[in-house]
Length: 204
Length: 118
Image (cartoon, rainbow over all chains, first blue to last red; front, side, top):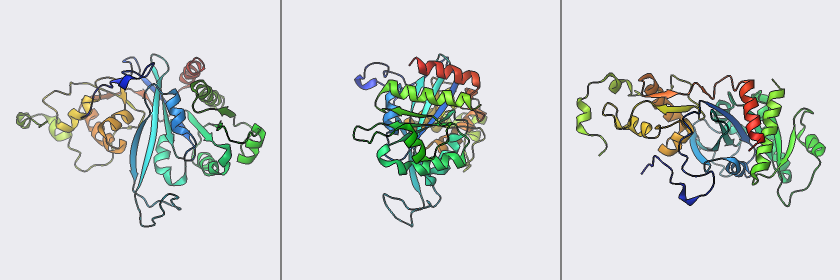
Protein backbone atom coordinates (compact mmCIF):
# COMPACT_ATOMS: atom_id res chain seq x y z
CA UNK A 1 0.00 0.00 0.00
CA UNK A 2 1.36 3.35 -0.95
CA UNK A 3 1.04 5.89 1.76
CA UNK A 4 0.54 9.53 0.98
CA UNK A 5 1.88 10.69 4.32
CA UNK A 6 4.85 9.56 6.32
CA UNK A 7 3.99 8.44 9.80
CA UNK A 8 7.50 9.15 11.02
CA UNK A 9 7.87 5.73 12.68
CA UNK A 10 8.46 7.35 16.03
CA UNK A 11 11.48 9.31 14.95
CA UNK A 12 12.14 12.47 16.82
CA UNK A 13 13.35 15.90 15.85
CA UNK A 14 13.16 17.28 12.35
CA UNK A 15 12.36 13.93 10.77
CA UNK A 16 8.71 13.77 11.37
CA UNK A 17 5.78 13.89 9.07
CA UNK A 18 7.56 15.52 6.13
CA UNK A 19 6.24 13.92 3.00
CA UNK A 20 5.89 17.29 1.31
CA UNK A 21 7.96 20.42 1.20
CA UNK A 22 6.43 23.64 2.48
CA UNK A 23 4.08 25.15 -0.12
CA UNK A 24 6.34 28.23 -0.23
CA UNK A 25 9.26 26.25 -1.70
CA UNK A 26 9.70 27.28 -5.34
CA UNK A 27 13.34 26.46 -5.99
CA UNK A 28 15.49 23.36 -5.67
CA UNK A 29 19.27 23.23 -5.75
CA UNK A 30 21.18 20.00 -6.05
CA UNK A 31 24.60 18.91 -4.94
CA UNK A 32 26.17 15.62 -5.95
CA UNK A 33 27.88 13.55 -3.29
CA UNK A 34 30.29 11.31 -5.17
CA UNK A 35 32.92 8.80 -4.21
CA UNK A 36 33.77 5.15 -4.41
CA UNK A 37 31.72 2.38 -2.81
CA UNK A 38 31.60 2.36 0.96
CA UNK A 39 33.14 5.79 1.38
CA UNK A 40 30.20 7.14 3.38
CA UNK A 41 28.00 8.93 0.83
CA UNK A 42 24.75 7.64 2.24
CA UNK A 43 25.92 8.25 5.80
CA UNK A 44 26.65 11.89 4.98
CA UNK A 45 23.30 12.34 3.26
CA UNK A 46 21.53 10.77 6.23
CA UNK A 47 23.35 13.08 8.64
CA UNK A 48 21.97 16.25 7.09
CA UNK A 49 18.74 15.17 5.42
CA UNK A 50 15.39 16.09 6.95
CA UNK A 51 13.92 12.90 5.50
CA UNK A 52 15.37 9.42 5.82
CA UNK A 53 17.63 8.89 2.82
CA UNK A 54 15.70 7.39 -0.07
CA UNK A 55 16.99 5.18 -2.85
CA UNK A 56 15.92 5.24 -6.49
CA UNK A 57 17.03 2.62 -8.94
CA UNK A 58 17.60 3.07 -12.64
CA UNK A 59 18.58 0.42 -15.14
CA UNK A 60 21.38 1.20 -17.54
CA UNK A 61 20.92 -0.94 -20.62
CA UNK A 62 24.26 -0.41 -22.34
CA UNK A 63 26.95 -3.00 -21.87
CA UNK A 64 28.96 -1.91 -18.90
CA UNK A 65 32.52 -1.12 -19.77
CA UNK A 66 35.37 -2.52 -17.81
CA UNK A 67 35.00 -5.17 -15.20
CA UNK A 68 32.34 -5.34 -12.58
CA UNK A 69 34.19 -6.01 -9.40
CA UNK A 70 31.25 -7.64 -7.70
CA UNK A 71 30.10 -10.07 -10.34
CA UNK A 72 32.17 -10.35 -13.48
CA UNK A 73 29.55 -11.55 -15.91
CA UNK A 74 30.53 -10.40 -19.40
CA UNK A 75 27.14 -11.23 -20.95
CA UNK A 76 25.36 -8.87 -18.60
CA UNK A 77 24.05 -5.90 -20.54
CA UNK A 78 21.97 -4.16 -17.91
CA UNK A 79 23.19 -2.63 -14.72
CA UNK A 80 20.97 -1.46 -11.92
CA UNK A 81 22.27 1.73 -10.44
CA UNK A 82 21.08 2.84 -7.07
CA UNK A 83 21.11 6.50 -6.19
CA UNK A 84 20.61 7.57 -2.59
CA UNK A 85 19.29 11.01 -1.90
CA UNK A 86 18.05 13.31 0.81
CA UNK A 87 16.75 16.83 1.14
CA UNK A 88 17.09 19.84 3.39
CA UNK A 89 14.73 22.80 3.37
CA UNK A 90 17.16 25.71 3.68
CA UNK A 91 14.86 28.72 3.43
CA UNK A 92 11.13 29.25 2.98
CA UNK A 93 11.73 29.09 -0.75
CA UNK A 94 14.77 26.86 -1.33
CA UNK A 95 15.20 23.12 -0.87
CA UNK A 96 18.60 21.49 -1.26
CA UNK A 97 18.76 17.96 -2.66
CA UNK A 98 21.80 15.77 -2.11
CA UNK A 99 22.31 12.92 -4.56
CA UNK A 100 24.81 10.23 -3.71
CA UNK A 101 26.12 8.44 -6.76
CA UNK A 102 29.04 6.18 -7.49
CA UNK A 103 31.29 8.16 -9.79
CA UNK A 104 32.83 5.32 -11.76
CA UNK A 105 32.92 5.41 -15.54
CA UNK A 106 30.33 2.70 -15.99
CA UNK A 107 27.72 4.79 -14.16
CA UNK A 108 28.34 7.80 -16.32
CA UNK A 109 25.02 7.69 -18.20
CA UNK A 110 23.16 8.28 -14.99
CA UNK A 111 25.70 10.67 -13.65
CA UNK A 112 25.97 13.09 -16.56
CA UNK A 113 22.27 13.88 -16.43
CA UNK A 114 22.54 14.55 -12.73
CA UNK A 115 25.51 16.88 -13.15
CA UNK A 116 23.58 19.28 -15.39
CA UNK A 117 22.52 22.25 -13.32
CA UNK A 118 24.14 20.99 -10.11
CA UNK A 119 25.70 23.58 -7.79
CA UNK A 120 28.73 21.34 -7.44
CA UNK A 121 30.05 18.02 -6.23
CA UNK A 122 31.35 16.94 -2.86
CA UNK A 123 33.94 14.21 -3.41
CA UNK A 124 34.10 11.95 -0.38
CA UNK A 125 37.48 10.30 0.08
CA UNK A 126 38.68 7.52 2.39
CA UNK A 127 42.41 7.96 3.08
CA UNK A 128 42.80 4.20 3.52
CA UNK A 129 41.78 3.75 -0.10
CA UNK A 130 42.95 6.89 -1.87
CA UNK A 131 43.43 5.13 -5.20
CA UNK A 132 39.70 4.37 -5.30
CA UNK A 133 39.09 8.10 -5.81
CA UNK A 134 41.22 8.47 -8.93
CA UNK A 135 38.55 7.42 -11.38
CA UNK A 136 35.85 9.50 -9.71
CA UNK A 137 38.03 12.62 -9.83
CA UNK A 138 39.05 11.87 -13.38
CA UNK A 139 35.41 11.61 -14.47
CA UNK A 140 34.52 14.85 -12.70
CA UNK A 141 37.37 16.76 -14.29
CA UNK A 142 37.04 15.43 -17.81
CA UNK A 143 33.27 15.07 -18.15
CA UNK A 144 31.96 18.07 -16.24
CA UNK A 145 32.82 21.64 -15.38
CA UNK A 146 31.34 21.26 -11.93
CA UNK A 147 33.10 22.97 -9.03
CA UNK A 148 34.07 20.35 -6.47
CA UNK A 149 35.53 20.05 -3.02
CA UNK A 150 37.33 17.01 -1.66
CA UNK A 151 36.03 15.96 1.75
CA UNK A 152 38.11 13.48 3.68
CA UNK A 153 35.76 11.20 5.57
CA UNK A 154 37.91 10.60 8.61
CA UNK A 155 37.59 6.96 9.66
CA UNK A 156 38.99 6.19 13.12
CA UNK A 157 41.68 3.78 11.89
CA UNK A 158 42.65 5.86 8.86
CA UNK A 159 46.12 7.37 8.53
CA UNK A 160 46.25 11.06 9.30
CA UNK A 161 47.66 12.80 6.24
CA UNK A 162 48.28 16.51 5.91
CA UNK A 163 46.02 18.19 3.32
CA UNK A 164 49.10 18.87 1.18
CA UNK A 165 49.94 15.17 1.08
CA UNK A 166 46.37 14.42 0.00
CA UNK A 167 46.53 17.14 -2.65
CA UNK A 168 49.69 15.61 -4.05
CA UNK A 169 48.42 12.04 -3.88
CA UNK A 170 45.18 12.96 -5.68
CA UNK A 171 46.90 15.39 -8.05
CA UNK A 172 44.51 18.22 -7.21
CA UNK A 173 44.76 21.84 -8.32
CA UNK A 174 45.84 24.34 -5.71
CA UNK A 175 42.39 25.93 -5.97
CA UNK A 176 40.47 22.77 -5.07
CA UNK A 177 39.55 22.98 -1.37
CA UNK A 178 40.17 19.97 0.85
CA UNK A 179 38.12 19.66 4.02
CA UNK A 180 38.11 17.06 6.75
CA UNK A 181 34.71 15.76 7.60
CA UNK A 182 33.04 13.08 9.67
CA UNK A 183 30.12 11.82 7.62
CA UNK A 184 28.27 10.86 10.80
CA UNK A 185 28.37 14.40 12.16
CA UNK A 186 25.68 16.80 10.99
CA UNK A 187 27.69 19.96 11.69
CA UNK A 188 30.80 18.61 9.98
CA UNK A 189 28.75 17.67 6.92
CA UNK A 190 27.08 21.10 6.84
CA UNK A 191 30.54 22.73 6.97
CA UNK A 192 31.78 20.57 4.10
CA UNK A 193 28.71 21.49 2.03
CA UNK A 194 29.22 25.17 2.90
CA UNK A 195 32.86 24.90 1.73
CA UNK A 196 31.59 23.56 -1.59
CA UNK A 197 29.04 26.35 -2.07
CA UNK A 198 31.66 28.97 -1.13
CA UNK A 199 33.98 27.43 -3.73
CA UNK A 200 31.17 27.39 -6.31
CA UNK A 201 30.57 31.11 -5.72
CA UNK A 202 34.27 31.81 -6.26
CA UNK A 203 34.45 29.94 -9.53
CA UNK A 204 31.66 31.95 -11.17
CA UNK B 1 -10.44 -2.42 -8.14
CA UNK B 2 -9.15 1.10 -8.66
CA UNK B 3 -10.73 1.65 -12.08
CA UNK B 4 -14.43 2.23 -11.75
CA UNK B 5 -16.25 1.20 -14.95
CA UNK B 6 -17.84 4.65 -15.05
CA UNK B 7 -14.44 6.14 -15.89
CA UNK B 8 -14.59 4.67 -19.35
CA UNK B 9 -17.63 6.73 -20.22
CA UNK B 10 -16.00 10.06 -19.49
CA UNK B 11 -15.21 11.61 -22.81
CA UNK B 12 -12.28 13.86 -22.06
CA UNK B 13 -9.29 14.75 -24.24
CA UNK B 14 -6.96 13.85 -21.34
CA UNK B 15 -7.86 10.21 -21.71
CA UNK B 16 -6.13 9.82 -25.03
CA UNK B 17 -3.37 12.28 -24.32
CA UNK B 18 -2.01 10.47 -21.29
CA UNK B 19 -1.38 7.22 -23.11
CA UNK B 20 2.34 7.29 -23.71
CA UNK B 21 2.07 5.13 -26.82
CA UNK B 22 5.48 3.67 -26.22
CA UNK B 23 7.23 7.03 -26.16
CA UNK B 24 10.33 7.12 -24.03
CA UNK B 25 11.31 10.77 -24.36
CA UNK B 26 9.56 13.20 -22.09
CA UNK B 27 8.68 16.57 -23.62
CA UNK B 28 9.67 18.51 -20.50
CA UNK B 29 12.99 18.68 -18.68
CA UNK B 30 12.24 16.55 -15.63
CA UNK B 31 15.15 15.66 -13.39
CA UNK B 32 15.21 13.89 -10.03
CA UNK B 33 15.32 17.33 -8.33
CA UNK B 34 12.47 18.87 -10.32
CA UNK B 35 9.72 20.00 -7.94
CA UNK B 36 6.12 19.26 -8.82
CA UNK B 37 2.70 20.00 -7.43
CA UNK B 38 -0.60 18.48 -8.45
CA UNK B 39 -3.27 20.77 -9.85
CA UNK B 40 -6.24 18.51 -9.39
CA UNK B 41 -7.45 16.00 -6.85
CA UNK B 42 -6.33 12.38 -7.27
CA UNK B 43 -9.97 11.43 -6.86
CA UNK B 44 -11.04 13.27 -10.01
CA UNK B 45 -12.93 10.87 -12.23
CA UNK B 46 -11.44 12.31 -15.42
CA UNK B 47 -8.04 10.71 -14.88
CA UNK B 48 -6.88 7.13 -15.21
CA UNK B 49 -5.33 4.85 -12.62
CA UNK B 50 -1.75 5.70 -13.55
CA UNK B 51 -2.33 9.44 -13.31
CA UNK B 52 -4.28 9.03 -10.09
CA UNK B 53 -1.32 7.24 -8.50
CA UNK B 54 1.03 10.06 -9.43
CA UNK B 55 -1.44 12.71 -8.26
CA UNK B 56 -1.82 10.93 -4.92
CA UNK B 57 1.88 11.66 -4.34
CA UNK B 58 1.66 15.28 -5.51
CA UNK B 59 -0.82 16.81 -3.09
CA UNK B 60 1.94 19.16 -2.00
CA UNK B 61 5.32 20.28 -3.32
CA UNK B 62 7.59 17.27 -3.87
CA UNK B 63 10.48 16.18 -6.09
CA UNK B 64 10.44 13.74 -8.99
CA UNK B 65 12.91 11.51 -7.13
CA UNK B 66 10.65 11.22 -4.09
CA UNK B 67 7.55 10.46 -6.17
CA UNK B 68 9.54 7.80 -8.05
CA UNK B 69 10.57 6.11 -4.82
CA UNK B 70 7.07 6.22 -3.35
CA UNK B 71 5.61 4.73 -6.53
CA UNK B 72 8.43 2.21 -6.99
CA UNK B 73 9.27 3.43 -10.49
CA UNK B 74 12.52 4.60 -12.06
CA UNK B 75 12.69 8.38 -12.53
CA UNK B 76 13.07 7.91 -16.29
CA UNK B 77 9.73 6.08 -16.53
CA UNK B 78 7.96 8.55 -14.27
CA UNK B 79 9.26 11.43 -16.40
CA UNK B 80 7.33 10.20 -19.45
CA UNK B 81 4.08 9.93 -17.51
CA UNK B 82 4.53 13.26 -15.69
CA UNK B 83 5.45 15.03 -18.90
CA UNK B 84 2.09 14.14 -20.41
CA UNK B 85 0.34 15.12 -17.19
CA UNK B 86 1.97 18.56 -17.38
CA UNK B 87 0.77 18.97 -20.96
CA UNK B 88 -2.70 17.99 -19.81
CA UNK B 89 -2.62 20.57 -17.02
CA UNK B 90 -2.83 18.00 -14.23
CA UNK B 91 0.54 18.79 -12.65
CA UNK B 92 2.75 21.88 -12.57
CA UNK B 93 6.52 22.31 -12.33
CA UNK B 94 8.11 24.77 -9.93
CA UNK B 95 9.99 26.68 -12.65
CA UNK B 96 13.07 27.43 -10.54
CA UNK B 97 13.61 23.83 -9.53
CA UNK B 98 16.87 22.32 -10.77
CA UNK B 99 17.23 24.44 -13.90
CA UNK B 100 19.72 23.38 -16.57
CA UNK B 101 21.62 26.63 -16.03
CA UNK B 102 22.03 25.88 -12.35
CA UNK B 103 21.35 28.10 -9.36
CA UNK B 104 21.90 31.85 -9.57
CA UNK B 105 24.61 33.60 -7.58
CA UNK B 106 21.95 35.06 -5.33
CA UNK B 107 20.51 31.61 -4.65
CA UNK B 108 23.96 30.18 -3.87
CA UNK B 109 24.51 32.98 -1.37
CA UNK B 110 21.24 32.14 0.35
CA UNK B 111 22.20 28.44 0.38
CA UNK B 112 25.60 29.24 1.89
CA UNK B 113 24.07 31.42 4.56
CA UNK B 114 21.59 28.72 5.50
CA UNK B 115 24.27 25.98 5.59
CA UNK B 116 26.42 28.14 7.85
CA UNK B 117 23.54 28.31 10.29
CA UNK B 118 22.43 24.70 10.06
